[in-house]
Image (cartoon, rainbow, N blue to C red; front, side, top):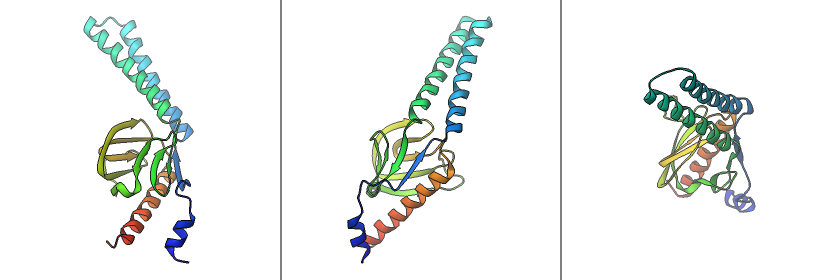
Length: 171
């Protein structure tokens, strides 16, 4: 049986790998952001700084609480890898496998913690799911509060899929 025959028998929507937020890291990250936001607001109320500083601290505290809520919502989903795409479990397509141009897993790469960076051939709208993934133009960061074992397995699967795609294309 050839590799093409094996590929035809697999379901293109079957989930090959997943990465989701580790519970401890998720709660710690959300808790720290929430605590920071509450502390900033408390300092603005309890201390007597000048009015502009008080407004600045309240605005920064509110922004930090908003970030904690964004992280809570963003880390409630998981990243799924199928044969054709990398997607969020809410249905958002992060990247098509055919569109991935390169991957960077290096130590000095600008990537999320415990994650990797993808470069795509075409640009897509900016999206940010704090703690899980982000996309800015052609660059996609996967990771954050995810376990390193899950993102490492996912990156190795993507690398193998890219190698197979390039081999099939004769590159």
